[in-house]
Each structure stands twice: as C-alpha cells, then as structure tokens.
Amino acid sequence: MTTTDRLSGVLYGSAYGDALAAPTEFTRDLHRIRSEYPPAGPTDLHAGSVTDDTQMMLAVGRALLGTPTLTASTAEGPLRHEFGAWLHDPQNTRAPGLTCLRACENLEAGGRWQDATVTASKGCGANMRVQPAAFIRDADARAGYAQLQAALTHGHPTALTAAELTAETVRLLLDGTPPGALVNALTAHAHTQRGTYREDWLGDLWRVAGASSPAAYIRQGWDEALHVLQRLSDATRAPIPEDADPCDFTGEGWIAEEALATGLLCFLLSPHDPVNTLRRAAVTRGDSDSLACLAGAFSGAHLGLHAFPADWSARIEYADELARQSAALTQKAW
Image (cartoon, rainbow, N blue to C red; front, top):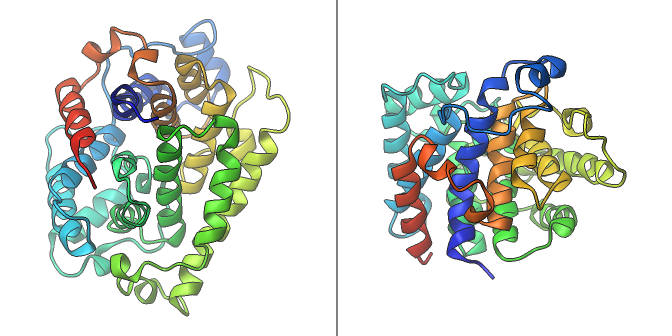
C-alpha cells in the first residue's frame, strides 16, 4: 500500500543519493574513493549539495504540478517553462549535461519541440529527473508524461523507454511490488509496450529522428531496454562481492538504459539498507551521482523517508522545495 512516507521517500531519496555520490562522479579509481571516504566509500551527505540531477527533477516536479490535466498539449508548456528557468538559474553550475543545455537553448528559441530535441542522444539526463512522473497513477498518462519529459531534450527512442521504465520501477515499488519481482515485471512491461508509439504525446518525433516508421522507432528503444534488463537479470542470479563495481555488470550509467539498470542493481544489492545502496552507487567508475539518484528513489519508494538518517532532511539542499513538492504531488489525483 502506498504511504505518504514512501511517496516523500522518492524525491528525498533521489536528492540524498545525488548529494552523497556527487563527490565521486568523475573519480574512476575505486581504491581512491575508498581511501578518501574510509573504510568503504561515502555514507554521508557531506555538505548536502546536489547536482543538476536534483535540480532538473524538481523542475519536472514543478512542471507536473502546473499541469492540471495530463495531455501532451497541456504538459508541454510547463515543461518548456521550467527547463528554460533551469537553463538560466544562477545555481545551474553543477556540471549540467551538454545535451540538456543544447536542447533547452533550442526550446527557448521557439518552434516545435520535436525540432529542438537532440535526436541522437539517450543520455541519462532523460531519466535521472523522471521521478515525479511516478506519482501519476494512470498507467497511460504516466508513460506518456515520462516519455514526453525525456523527449523534449533527448530524442533517441531508448531515452524515452528508459524514462518510462524508471517511472514504472518507482510506481511498482510504491504499489508494493517486492524488489525480487521487479526485473521480471519490468521485462514483461517492456514486451507489452514494444509496439506502442505514443503519437498523442510524441507527434512526428519518429520522422524527425529519421526512423522508417513509428513502430520501428520505438521498437529500437524497447529492444535496447530489454537487452539491459537481461544483463540485470543475469547479474542478480549470483552473489556480487561487496568490493565489486556494479558498473561491471550493467554499465556505467552515462546512457539512460544503463543508468536505470545499474541504479536498480545497486538497490537490489541491499534493498533493506538505503545508505548502503547509495554507497554502492557512489563507489563506481560510472556516473555515480545519477546512479545514486535513481537508487535513492527506489529505496525511498520501497522503504520510505524514515529509513534514511533522520538528520539528512534538514541538511539536504533544496529541503524546503523537496518538502513542498512531496506534499503537493501526494495530494494530486491524476
């Protein structure tokens, strides 16, 4: 059963993971990470500062809260506005992704969003910010919104499918799906959606991306998602040593489908210990803050906000907005 504590855990958990793992994002040497944060890697928020991951997640949350009815025509405007505000935010100094910057500049110039997006990109910026979409209870609206918020900046089909699967993972956990059943549930979801191009949300994006048909466009995304889900399934069948790098099994997370798979793997390695989940994501050679951001969302959805250290909620950056959005999104009835 979904509880307010677990709903709050989604946004807070994401921000906690982002802050805890941010210092190790560009450190590929695991020995160095453990030496700098003994004995086995970071387990605290340090200064509590977050990166562009949390900033963009909050932008999506604000856009969603400003969307009274969920359709592409009503959702596009608030997303454009919030992405533009993020682009010019004086605090947008946290190593933002080049794809997000370029696409937001294109969006600001006007015209159709399908012509503004970066169609070749499936970077993890597409799904490290999608968590608010998981608050949408209607499955079709949740999928459409998750894909649209990704597509405005990342037009590759796998960016869209990875964003949908990330939101679906959080929703499954909120609805009580056991962690051990997630990979099979996501794989089944991917198979059922493999032929579904959401034209009402995406318009002619497939044509702009140069695909031969809508079905061929989205099928590529689902096939790549299914491939990484198979890698994840294989990884969960045998014990993974504590000192192993999760990136060795499911990828470094710079691209969207690998960010989902490796973030989820970090959660599945210790589903009842959220701090250890975040530590596992931080002690990697990959995109550690994005991996921990997603892993934190999964932990929060499963265990709730109370499972994290109590003092973190006052120390995390954007604490007031995290509290406001958590409460407001919980009250919405989409």
